[in-house]
Image 1 (cartoon, one colour):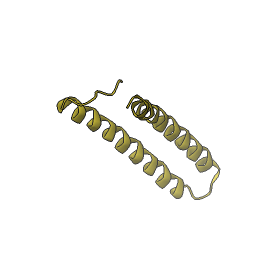
Image 2 (cartoon, helix red, strand yellow):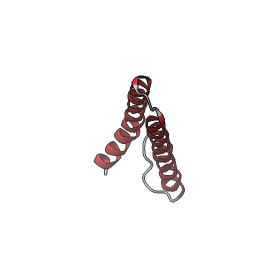
Image 3 (cartoon, rainbow, N blue to C red):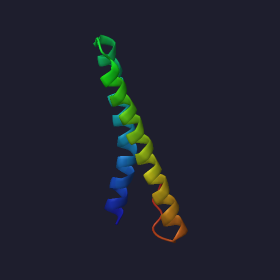
Length: 74
């Protein structure tokens, strides 16, 4: 069980970092591209993914705490 909790915490750290790197890459490509609309859509999709993944993590904390399950360390 500890291994699964460690992987969950690792994902909670890596997803926002990877999303931020993807946004920076899209901004760099957008500054050089003639038509930046596709990169704007990609940035929006990355932001939606980051928000949803963080919400799922928060809901998981609340549900496990409410039902007396294993509390994931923050």
